[in-house]
Length: 428
Image (cartoon, rainbow, N blue to C red; front, side, top):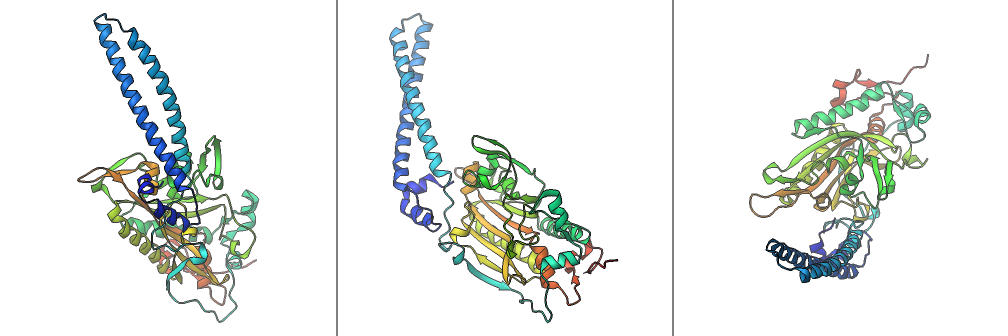
């Protein structure tokens, strides 16, 4: 949620920042609504105070058996006026929130305006794979190596699902073990959250109300998804300290979680969505930070460095991209994507989004910290995939494939695998 004080004091800055996302709203109309809300709030407080004074005087007269008919009449009038004012206040508060809730976060000043066409490549790391033989794509490789069973995944659950089998399941689990070991070594606390969340969790994360129709809903009420399958562990982690005030000495808090991610849309039948590149369910390890504002920049750099190191240690060619305002998630102020090269598509695909939400999510979830001196303030929240596996497996297979159809297992994964080289299944 945006800071209302910022909108009041710097309306033109807010207007221009939202325009970088191609979001155009009537700020002037909101400011008029905000003025009216504050005026009515003052009137309600005045009437409540007067009512309390009259009630106190009535009680005093009753104790000494003095007449209070005039005050009873006054109290009745006050109660009527107060009821009308409170009803008006409730309507204004609902309109106020209805304006603020759908607004995305303000992008940082150095974030490019526009959509994904304006994303900026920050750096490219490693050598672009070159092949002296006709390389196979990940769908051919997973089938030939017996790693993924798409046919039976569809039979069990419909399109957009698959089954990891044999060495494919072991390789998937090796990746998750590799991420888990790295994050524990770096001092992150491991969390296994529920996969079913309530509406409040989606609201705090910034996904609701605007994107409520994009999750896999289990139960609905008048607001939308009352219970839904989490689309990412970030949605759970950001809610760990909802409605809490942390001590400054506790920050930063650094967590990571493993969960499947459940998505409503699984893409089409185009090449960019084939295999495990896009589906309704995939595995992901997510990192999350709660920080003070002063710690947020260092935390963002730490998360990006960790995501990059995980990819680099798998021996993959990748790049880092700064997302344009219109390509970022609505809750984020700045995002870097770590993208691996996929030879069959001749392009890069994202395996980690590393984002700073600043105080946007904390305002929605009332997550504060108490400084050593001064008043409490909102924490800043940051998250990063560390990592998503469904695109890593295709990249590992395609970038590391050999002419004989074998694929060496990245060295960092070998202690969890029964073999050092994945070999094609021989039909008997």
